[in-house]
Image 1 (cartoon, rainbow, N blue to C red):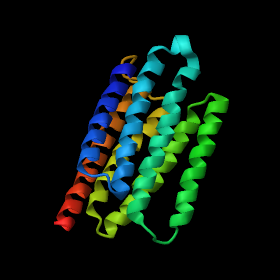
Image 2: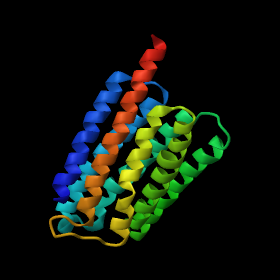
Image 3: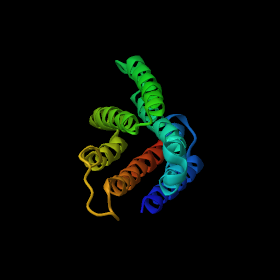
Image 4: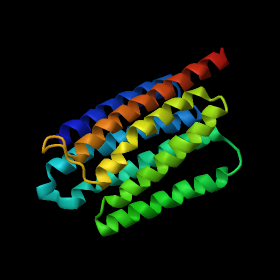
Amino acid sequence: MALILNWLVAAFSFFAFASLKKRSAAGNLSYFAKFYLTLGISTFFGGLGHLFFQYTGFYGKFPCWITGVLAGYYAGKGVLEVYGNRKGYKFLYFFLLVKSLLLICLSLISLKFVFVAIDAILTYLLYCGYLAWKLWKDEVSAMRFLVFGVAVLLPSAFIFLLNVNISRYLNRDDLSHILMLACIILFYQGMKSMVGKEHTEKA
């Protein structure tokens, strides 16, 4: 199940990357395209890391962890590009960069996924949640899909931290991946909306 669900997320991520890359390569949209590309790579290797865990151990999960944090960075940077030169931009970018580097280093040194999870929670709540909500209130309507996506993804933090396992075929990782797939589909709807607006403004 871990392999199947990881690769479902990867398949949609690669589709979204190809679609966004084809539609527009400008500004923040290019960061969101990179988000889907790196997330696709992350979940592709994540599936293999789960499948071959008995052979590779935690070291087999390193490619997934590293690209997963990089995907979060691109998502946050994409929102920041929409946020523009509003108050606090420099601090928010500095925080995004430093916490990503710090937490992935802690994860690799300690061999603990929890630091990757903390990075994801901070990134998606602050940048794709709070900042996207502020932009939505400032009439960037496409950002509402990011807010909805974060709302859908939020229970996965509790599922993981509380070790919620419905069955051996639907454990905490599987549940989190299902919510992740729903989240990135909503994100994609927001990106499509932004591309449509960009094309309308150019016309």
